[in-house]
Image 1: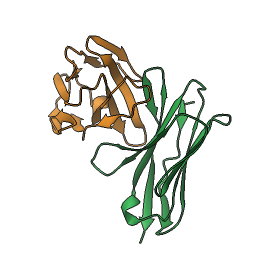
Image 2: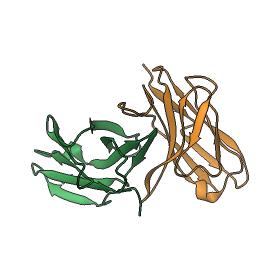
Image 3: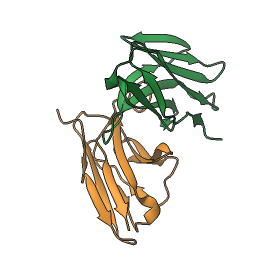
Image 4: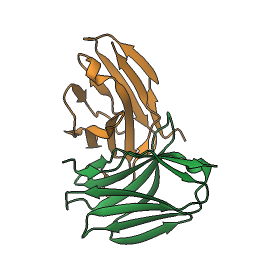
Length: 109
Length: 114
């Protein structure tokens, strides 16, 4: 079992819908949780990061962490075609940052 | 501000050849790392460094060497390239180790080994 599991999709939703992206993890040593967005042929860019269980909001994006269930989520409200990208969850333990496989998201106009 | 710069952008090697992928950052970041990205596999950590003179292995270190003689540079060496090393390679850096500090990525080097 990989330490970080993420459904690769693809996930297609209509414009304006709420998108939910999820990751699970198996190692309780993970302390720091991140979401990255990656456009085609580009490096990943940071969207959200958090340490603790609970919700963190930034504009249309909300990151949610449930350490008891070892489950993290990213919600995108009022999705736009420009949100079409691959979304990667990432988690830090010790000095290593481990990524999920990424979920390909398509927002349909 | 250039951020993280990777060179070359594209490279084709024959099996058995060696080469070095370059990575430089101008943000005075202590932490640097190398990932490879393959279809369906996500980003996998190859090697990382928490500061000049210190390196350590990640998830998939075999076939790769690194060194960190300066804060700015973190080259990745392929000693004898194999087709299994065909991938997109990303270098990333962050300010204070990996703790509490997000990674900044370069735009990748696309390597094909024939």
